[in-house]
Amino acid sequence: MARALFFLACGLALLASSIASAAHVEHYFHVRDTAVRRLCRDIVITTVNGSLPGPTIQVHEGDSLVVHVLNDSPYPITIHWHGVFQYLSAWSDGTENTTQCPIRPGESFTYRMIITGQEGTLFWHAHSQALQATVHGGLIIRPRRGRSYPFPKPFREFPIIFGEWWNDSVVRVTSAALARGNGPDHSKAFTLNGQPGVLQPCSADSIFKMKLIQGKTYLLRLINSALNMQFFFKIAYHKMTVVAVDACYTNPMETEVVVIAPGQTVDVLLKADQQPGSYYMAALNFISWDGIPHEYKAATGIITYQNAETSTPPLMPILPFQNDSSTAFTFHSNLTELVNGPHYVPFPQEVDENMFVTVSMGVLPCQKNATCKGPFGKRLSGSMNNQSFQFPKLSLLEAFYYNVSGIYTTDFPDHPPGPYDFTKQSNNFNEALINVNGTTRLKKLKFNSTVQIVFQNTAQISYESHPMHLHGMDFYVLAQGFGNYDPVNDPKKFNLVNPQRRNTIAMPADGWAVIRFRANNPGTWLLHCHVDMHLLWGQSMVFEVENGPIPSTSLPPPPPDLPQCSDLESVANRNSPMLSES
Image (cartoon, rainbow, N blue to C red):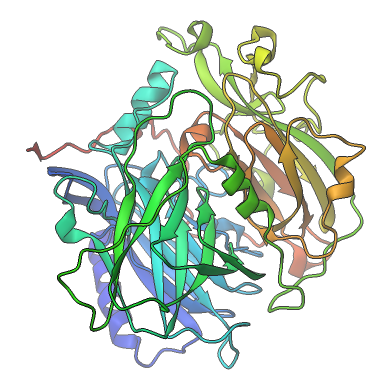
């Protein structure tokens, strides 16, 4: 019955779309398993509406967005609207066991939100069991009707989504890694808009292509929905101008290469100013960790000028070395906000809460009757201040709203247990440091308080760049650097005038980053590493932002169709079968 009503509603929505208000945008997501062919193999993946990537949602700032989700997949699932503030609509954030319990197979849920106070490029993705790998799509927020971009209007826009590809069920891959207690198998390829490109077998005929007219300017909306990888992105013989990151406008920054971490978006202007011809665009992963890098080939697409000679092969860009941390740091650290641009919010100068948070890998005891292959026979774990977050069966937001005791505590530590040389390589496998605690400890914040966090990366087990993503609010990036944070000298490097504003920061490997944000959105908001396996390992924490003093600053009650919580373990362990293998 739920499925029949869903498809009836789809038809009625299409019929009404021509007469509905332009300020009301409605979509229907049918989550189901779909057979696709990649890398010479037929495989079943979970998709939205049968496509990879899923549908691109386009709204204007100020619109209301309603998305009806029917889950016909074998997995419980949530859909997260990555970067959307969700002011007073925290129930629609789509974060499993933080703001809701997942939508069970055969059931549905409607996400409702007002898109206000931001414009640019965001995206949506599954926030359950690594399903983001194939369940994702773009979310484009254009200026409010009657308003314009803070740069010349481009001739055309292209969303480009970066992804990873496995020749197996991604749920099976990550579940096996969790059971073993060590890292998952590497992905087999990278993708641009779902296609690997010419460097991979059986992929040349379905490569992503763009058609350009010489002299025109185009807006490329770059989205990194990969589970694990940062990317270098270049277009042969073309420069790009960055104009926004994470739906926040920046001062224009010209560059030959874009660096984009999981969870980040970057808007660039591309001027078609070269000789008519064909040129490859390419995305190769940035290796931020130590050790021998796994061999990868770049994902590729093609731009072709109108009236170009088709017999001439495309030109390939020269990409940075995979471990070029200098290029990555230069790109990430040189961005600044467009002061007094659309939706500019004055930078908060006073700080109410100071936190120093170590972001580390560690170990937890092996589960009962299991054999773990992590360090010291234990299972790998991600942690923040030595706390590895354990999600409860009930959603944290429901526990917050109904004041349910015994689900979590609000004593997340502001500092790690003790000081040590965080980036010293000899601490790599120091057992006294890598043993962490599995807890459900939140940090309580007063409404409208200003929080400053020093993120300190560590060398425990390995060192790598962690893309830290905050739900429900943007933050300002004051500074970032390498080594141990120096509380005396590093504050002198803070940009207190026009720091970049975003929702995901790629903190340097073997380094630190400082962010500041205003807690002006009541609810429970996840802060986590956007490397998916690190999130599954517990590299996250949650802020409980208290209600404000009046009803318009307080969390409203949950919607009547909010998914109910129950034991989903048997359902979650199902795996999609592979159809065949060539």
